[in-house]
Image (cartoon, rainbow, N blue to C red; front, side, top):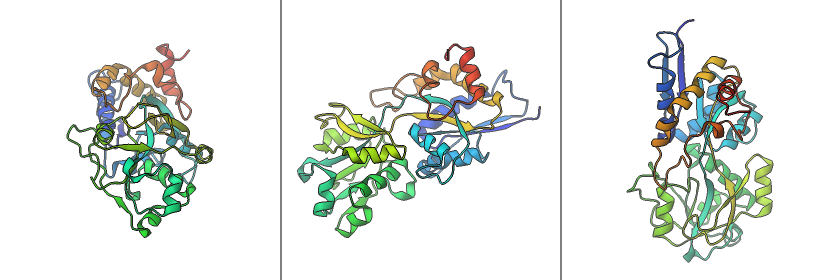
Length: 318
């Protein structure tokens, strides 16, 4: 067998923590790969766009594996729905616990209690949310949501508002500046991070619920509803209906050789302690330790047969 080059697309710091350890586990001493093979964890810019575009790049063979979030984004890619123009032949290898929601929060002093008010009153808000140039799934979802309430970023600007380009580079850094102090609203995900801890302790926020018809529209196109649980953050005074943003998923193309998918899960099994150890503290984005039995369940797309073989050997699938 000739040497192989394995590339794992890991756009962003969190996934590089996982991908680098997977690469180490797949290669190194006594690797079953042919001598001269290489395994690389690859990031790039802009990372969010690479995350969303990853399924296409993996399906085309530019990478053998990719990691993305939320898990439903991969289901959209396989079905050719939402931002994906055509179905992409991708399968799951492993899922990772990442308990997240998309949050729509406003400063209480604005008096806003509903997204309807923003359009009805044509409020000139300063809104912190990802720009379209980022290619971030949160922004794609926000465009869908705002359209259901009858306005857009362009409308906000025409009313005298602004989209603030203030999203921190490192949302979990202890010294993170969570938002431009002039903000009126923050529409974003990653609510487990230090950024949201600081936002909710430094400012009095109100979390806006999504209406049932909007949640139904989002679910119809593949974005499931979730709940920001009461008291999860300061200012969440009751359960808030939201869009679920949970889960990281490691995936590959349908035609990836079984041996490589098997080896990736074996590496995950061997490195699970080291991966878990890289995510610590109350604001850790990997919200539960890596558990092989959980990694192969509730997947958004079919499990690759090579990955499935390893899980069954270990008794994780019964």
